[in-house]
Structure formats: structure tokens, C-alpha cells
Image (cartoon, rainbow, N blue to C red; front, top):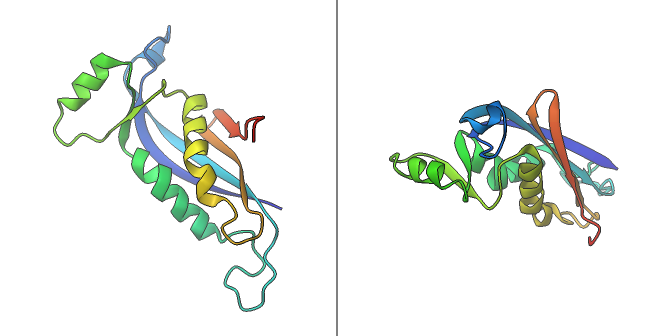
Length: 150
């Protein structure tokens, strides 16, 4: 069985090597979808009876490990030193320094890697993170899934 929970957050970024508008500082209303697989829990009296995982718990874990960290932050590539230096000069600015350029593809992969172990077999029902879909705009998104080594 597959279940998916969607959350939204706002963040800024730039793609320093981009040849068009995305090289400038700008922001997005991102949406992230967390898709999990697992067996439906069948235990009378259990709060999760009939579920793969309670959607509120899917949300809480995604918020704790990704969304709350990135929401209203500037997502900056460590190698973009001009921006990193500028942002560090702003008192109390919420900046997240990443080891790669903050494209939709890279952000989806980072989110997947952060969340993979968080959801793994939480209820003993073979729970597994299957996919993180990150929407940069309503029409553009990237999907991160398990790599071939998993």
C-alpha cells in the first residue's frame, strides 16, 4: 500500500551557474510530497489500525527533519561564496548551507536522504520511504527515489 502526505513551505535560492533568471536571488512556494509504502496495520485497539502510518505523524516527521528547517530560509550552495558571505553578514538570517546547488533535483535528493531512515519500519509493518517529490512551481518538480544500491 502507498500513502502520500503533501506539505508546503517558502524558501529562497539561486542557481549560480544558470544562464537565465534563476541565477538571481529569488524564492518559491515549494511543495513536498512524502510517499511511503507499507502494510496496512491490522491491530484492534491500535491508534494506527487500518493505516500504513497516521498522516499526522508523516507530517510531524517531515516538518521536524526538513520543512521547518527550510521554511522561510535561504537555501545556499556552500560553493556560492559571495552569497554565503553576504547572508552570513545579516544578523539572525535563516540560511541553510547545502553541499550542492539548490536545484529541485538536488533538494528532492537531500530531503529523501534526510527522511529515509526516519520513516523506516516505524510500526513493524515494513514501512519504507518510496519517493520524495519536490515541486519548485506547480508545473515543475523532481522525484527522488531509492538508488540502485538500496
